[in-house]
Amino acid sequence: MVAQLTVAERRLCLYLLAAVAIVGLALAATGRSDPIGVHGAIALLASVGMIFVVLSGYYEPEPSPERLSHYYDDPIKVGIVLTMAWAVVGMFLGVWVAALLAWPDLTFDAGWASFGRLRPAHTTGVIFGFGGNALIATSLHVLQRTSRARLPGQVSPWFVLFGYNLFCIIAVTGYLMGVTQSKEYAEPEWYADIWLVIVWVTYLAIYVRTLARRKEPHIYVANWYYMAFILVVAILHVFNNIAVPVSLAHAKSYSAFSGVQDAMTQWWYGHNAVAFFLTAGFLGMLYYYLPKRAGRPIFSYRLSIISFWGITFIYMWAGPHHLHYTALPQWVQSLGMTFSVILLVPSWASAGNALATLNGAWDKVRTDATLRFMMVAAVFYGLSTFEGSFMAIRPVNSLSHYTDWTVAHVHAGALGWVAMITFGAIYSLVPWMWKREHMYSARLVEVHFWFALAGTIIYVFAMWNSGIIQGLMWRTYNESGTLTYSFIESVEAMHPYYIARTVGGLLFLIGAVVGAYNVWMTIRTAPRQAEAAEPDLPVPTFAARPAE
Image (tube, rainbow, N blue to C red; front, side):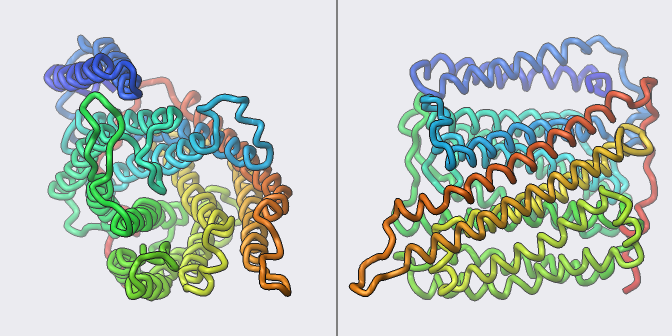
């Protein structure tokens, strides 16, 4: 890591880390009786730790100028390790949260272990910790290979990785201390939001600068999706988190919006976070790693472009379908419902394009578990987008909303689509990065796949049953016109499904642990000698504009 930096770049790292340490020290000193003090201490410790890492290699010889003729893969390697670490942590919290619904005493009388605090810690750990690190690592890999250009800065990728993971740690620990902005995605503290803006703008600058320096005139479609993800998430984050802090020494803040305007802003953000963080970014991953692994060109490059623009424009209007039967104006609800139904067209275009790409490679799907991860991801993407459009229809939403059906839908996308394509991409990427012919154990990849698939199916089917039963019980009336079932009776009816949900989540977690072990052993058994960096290579055959 440090050996790849010049002395001037090492000095710049020390300056940046010292600045973070000073800010952390100031927060720790001014907010001693507030969670902001804890977060200041975390920032201080993290930056001091990284300072020692830089100092340990500060007097290493200057790297050869020839390094600039090779791809810059060190940040990608660290991003992969962080991805798998967050996968285990985030999914462990998810199993704990699921178990709490079946056995509430698992809080162990600890306030930080309550459902209300563990749940946002789980969602942030999985979505932003696991998913975000996967997107950063794979995007930097795809960007370099498809543009045949090295990343423009040697320090900025490390700043993005360090800064982004510091944000995730601050967010998760803040939730455990009970500090949020009280929104659907339990937004973290105001100072964490400002820090993320700095990190994200740096990430965007890396991407734009690399594309500007590209040696391949064509911008491959995966980069379109990654760029949309980076740019739109920046806009969403800024507008959804406009807030006024109580004071500079206090973690609490108040949103600039209120009432129905706040609800609309929240779901404009919430649904487009799904659209561009959990869809566009991972479609970029799909459009590179699936054809690469299958050894086949994209079935229709033109269709992938049409799908991109359809998703980009239509998804932006779909958020109001989360607010049916509320104070939101009826025409806005209808607009969200209409665009949500239309959204099925570009979404299925992407899913169908991915599956059609496997024509002629189905024999590989049978024998290659890594490719099977990607195939199953494409199937779940198609199923989840159909279900999302269906649930946006107002009469259907009257049954599904506030029930576990929504939980089933979310996890069909999170486990079946996002996690599956991520694991497939990582199993492809790890041997390439560490110069291995294959993973440490192909059998463990198979084991991981079947644990993940079984866990997803059990989880989703349990929540489908639970949600539909909930919805029906809540709207069942007796002959006198009153509700047949009390709310507590509906909760009691959910108990066996919550047990099944916990079992499904546990299976998925076991698969993630197996995958993390496999990745770690692949890294440990990589050749010990200094590895020659990969030179600039021609763009993969599928990345060039193919004939339709």
